[in-house]
Image 1 (cartoon, rainbow, N blue to C red):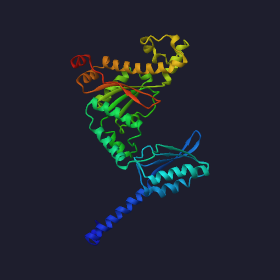
Image 2 (cartoon, helix red, strand yellow):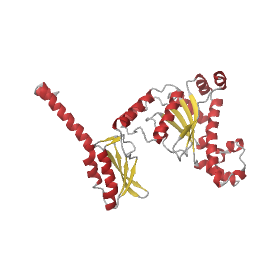
Image 3 (spheres, helix red, strand yellow):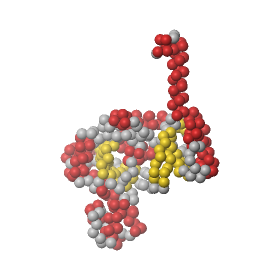
Image 4 (cartoon, rainbow, N blue to C red):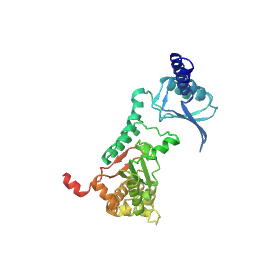
Length: 345
């Protein structure tokens, strides 16, 4: 505007366009990645996290950074959240790993780098996925969104969770889609596993995924005050707490972890002679599923408010199971009150 006022309309527009192009090119040149120096168990590691879009304009900046990495360093190049990386940049990364890094004794670990990128499809996916989340209005919609989200996570189509503090503050003012109860052994980021946006989930923790009256009250508050429309009880495979409780039970030892499996062992009629090292993991997975279902049943039986909302269809409740080997989350169908089931039939 100032250029137009000081000169004329045509010259002002040209000056404004030129400045816009300059800052656009400058932004692309200087901001293709984030750099972190982390001190891990095996020493200091340099991590380069690539941005959402990396164009050919970033080639020189990335090459300049990588070719100045000190000898004998450890480098992680993370392309997990990159929707598009230009082929020239991919070649630079591969050249660094295969030639420069080997010549200078640099250990390189690349994460999430694909062989090729489709510019339009991948970028559109993120925007469309975030837009879908806003349209979820029923428990059925939300559950379907989570199922689709886990498939996208497995396929590497991820929503970026990079946010500035202002954007994060805006997100937490929105009602969560769901409240999820997981075991304290379940430390993986649930919002990444089902590929949801920031603040879409309220996560609660309880050992063995067992819900007592206090946990159920917290779930009620998450639905009543925060507006969550779906309740999930999520177990996980390879649960170390349940496996340790099974080991103690096998040896006849008294353990503080015994309460995590008592109900399941009795209901599933598991005898001590059946518990061997080989089948302990499989049994632990079964018990994790059992506990999730048991917590669901306790909620239905002991919380009048939530049961009424479930009966009205305003809140849904289901179980889920996360397989650490495949990263797949298997969801049950939504719980249906007996009266609704009879009517449906």
